Length: 216
Image: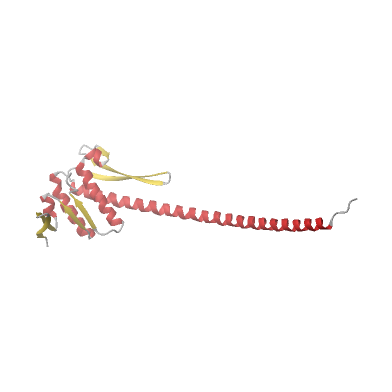
């Protein structure tokens, strides 16, 4: 029987020791990886719960805003279009985790029939324009933005006989909500409804503002 070389045995021992070290390193890395996976799974569970919470809070805010918009727009429509018996109903739907909102304009007729649809398609520019302005007021109010809204000929589509009521309602809202509406218009009815009115005259390539009056 051939005797093994002692050097070869020492080499094998070193190799075995090196392999044990590699094994221990790999085992430590596996343990660290498993621990990290466990931490990430726990973090993912927490983040999922946070996401669910945010979704509930956002959905709640959307619904609250919709209800505020529904109330204000209905009040505005009933005040301005007093001959049409208009109200607004909100339809809230959740699709694929996202909230969708549709505002439906409803009109009750004297014969008991009811029609409903989108403002523009069913009732034309007057109602749609007023709803758009009122929605902007809701956004300004609910988002705590600066209490100022600019209207640059935004009410041009409103029928002439409704304009005085629009002006009066906007003035009432400004006082009630402590906000200002700056409207650029050629409509004398809106000018009469305003608290302060200016006329803009061209002056050699620039503009000159002249105060017409201020209501007390």
